[in-house]
Length: 201
Image (cartoon, rainbow, N blue to C red):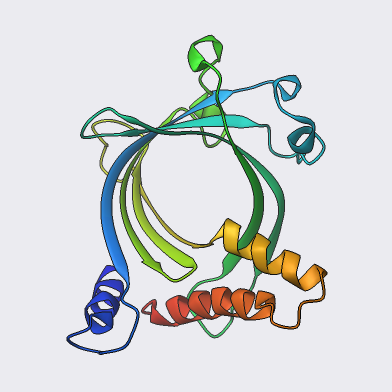
């Protein structure tokens, strides 16, 4: 998959394909730490949409190289759609989330117990590919430092720009015939299907 995406970056460059908008590529090494947070500390829009199967958490992301805090986020999962793909080697899941920046101090919060599912710390070696309103993240995750043999997980995520999907959705709700909401969603699904077909048997 890494080779497939790197080749896509090369083919999008102006020298190889004049007139095409190129893909951008970044390589990041980050560490996520998850903290428990009470729903009472969250704004109403988050509390009202909490999924009872997923407790709210604060995710603090650090740059492994510099120690800089890159983000403090509260993510609220709204819904999942699991897609069975019998003609490819992978199935996939579409998740809809609410996210907000966390402005508080995490020093009073408790680190999530890693024994209760995803929590504690995760060290991420991530390659991100961005094109138009879409971002593809290919990530190797280690749950311990240094990682033990076989402790790695590999994740492939496709994200659509939240700002753009909201903008086009608002245009669609307003009845603007020039809205591109459906085209934006179709492009998102097409990206997933292309990646699924690229996974070798």
